[in-house]
Image (cartoon, rainbow, N blue to C red):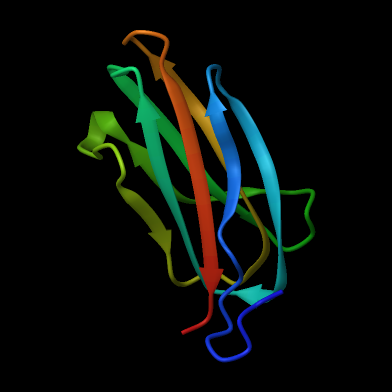
Length: 114
C-alpha cells in the first residue's frame, strides 16, 4: 500500500543475495508510477555486475528502463533510475555477475510519482 501523502510504494526486493544471473521478482505497484529506481548492492567483490531495471504495463512484456553496470562506472550501492516512463510493474534482471569470492547481488526497487 502506498504512503497516502507521498504516493510512494514501499521498497521491494527483486533480487535477494542471488549468486547467478537471471530475472528477479516482480514489483506490482498500487498505481502507475513514472519514477522508478533500483539500488544494487553486491558482496564478495565481484569484478563485473550488470543489471537492468525493467518495467511493464501488463506484467508480461518487460523493457529496460535503466541500467546498473560496473563496466560503465557504476559502483556498489549506486542507484539506477527512470523518470519518464509510466509503468505498473518493475523488476531487476541480473545480466552479468563475474569474479570475486562467492559474489552476491541484491536489488531493491522504489517507485512513486513526484
